[in-house]
Amino acid sequence: MSNLGLIISLIVIGAGLLWLLILSLKGREVERRVIFLFVGLAVSIPLLFNITFSEKATPIVMNVFNKIDSLPPGSKVLLSYDYGPSMAPEVDPMSNAFIRHCLTKGHKLYIMALWATGQSLAATAIDSIIKTEFPEKRNGVDYINIGYKAGGTGVLNVIITDIRKMYLTDVSGVNLDSVPIFHGIKSLRDMDLLISIGGGYPGVKEWVLFAGAPGDIPTAGGCAAVSAPLLYPYYPRQMLGLLGGIKGAAEYESELMRRYPRFKASPTPGIKMMGPQTLAHLIIIAFIVIGNISFFISRRKRG
Image 1 (cartoon, rainbow, N blue to C red):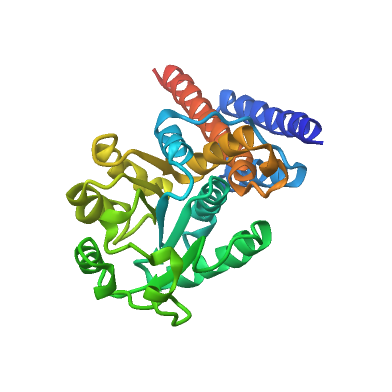
Image 2 (image 1 turned 135 degrees about the vertical axis):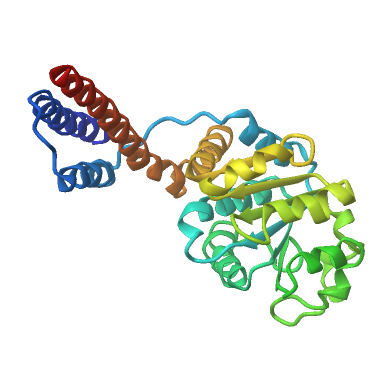
């Protein structure tokens, strides 16, 4: 179905682009609505036919994957939900993939949020991923959600020396001293890996500057595509890896399925969203080429 959909998509879009090229060569103007129609087709057809493309993890993504994969079972991984619902479609696939990977490796997962909206998103992930796919994992033993605390970077400045100055209980009100997963945990320096997912402030950059770098704690991130260029300067010395946008999520999902076949039946929204994104980008490139051809032809006719 995917191959048939891809062939149909290429035929429809290719024929349309050829028609536009002919119009341009004749000096006819193309209405803006036609361009919108093509972009709409490029997005809707891959969704309709479930068109996907193979993904191969790039080094900046593989570094995150290899770090989680190489940590011994029982390692402590902190996952911070630093985003809201508007960013969720782009970065939720990353957090879901991190949860699956960490729990499969037997790591202890500490979930928190620097954004108020992150707490409810984390709770949703716990219900839909951990409780559904890992029913044997126990809250307070294998994972814990300590939720959101106001203060932004101030929270990081405190918990890098003493977590209990900001967090005394988890989101359910259970004292942290009473849960096995927090035995022996005093500060962020007791974590083996910090992962922030977001794209705004505070987010990955603040985790690097206020926790990872000063505490010499391995730090990784996942962010919206628009935020990724601002974080690349911290890679690889201060940040071991980064998942940028839906492309980074798709690469991570692909590597997770390749290494752990049990996840081949799991949802892969990152990979599925790359189909429309890839075709839409190809359409835009084609428009740029056609526009340039039209420009040079019209200039030759004038001159």
